[in-house]
Image (cartoon, rainbow, N blue to C red; front, side, top):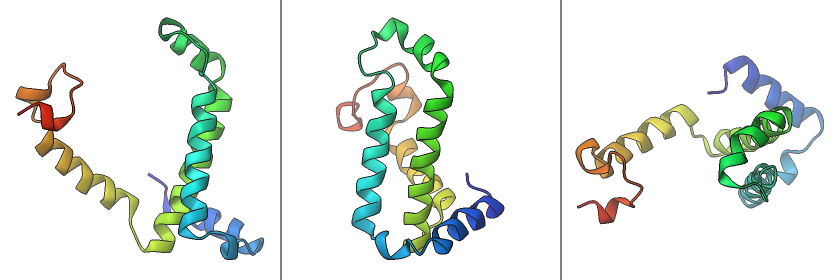
Length: 115
């Protein structure tokens, strides 16, 4: 997750530019979606067998898109008073309940089809 030092840099970057005014929940959610689409664009026309090779060749571009997504999610979580690590832990607990190993292992079915 984002360290406290990195969080402070991210927040300072935004504050120094007076961008908080533009970072509503809606605008940040849109930005996360747009950056996720840019991430997917890196392998858009790549066949499944070639994805790892393309991802390796475009590693820096992919890293930049992941960073953009993480930054926008960090702003969103901060502004909503959410701790990303806590959100992940809670969701992981839900996923562990919905996808028990004995029913989900090796399967890609949604949880409601595992029961």
